[in-house]
Length: 155
Image 1: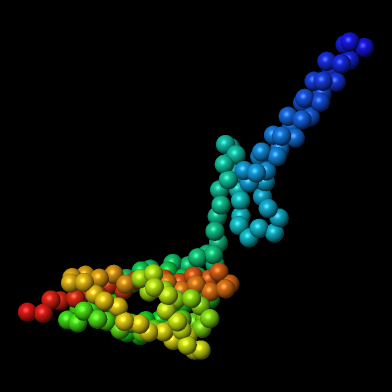
Image 2 (image 1 turned 30 degrees about the horizontal axis):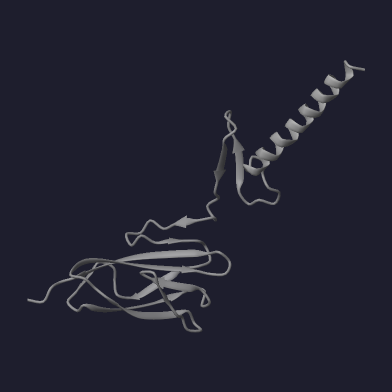
């Protein structure tokens, strides 16, 4: 009987350790989630590599630094990129493809009308000014445009 007690203790200890080990690994997201849209591939070191498909984020290589998901776009009607102006106040006008999207210009939220049009006035500093326009919608789509405007000092 005395020989069986250490064996039972060892078995209980081993099973408990295995359960704890599996719970810790699950918390570290080693096991892929069901219905996940991301593809996971394992390496020899059990590192998780996540590959995003082209539809997850498309990057437009234009000179204005446009970034957008398919399904949400920003069109800037005014001003043109890389323009030089002489007034410290600048009106920005544009449209988002999803009228209900939230629009931010330099971190300030701008309201859109029912057609997705927006406009606002920003203050410029002398020299080069970067204006960042960001939009996101309820579906998780994201778009970003960057404009560069140069304020030339009045002489």
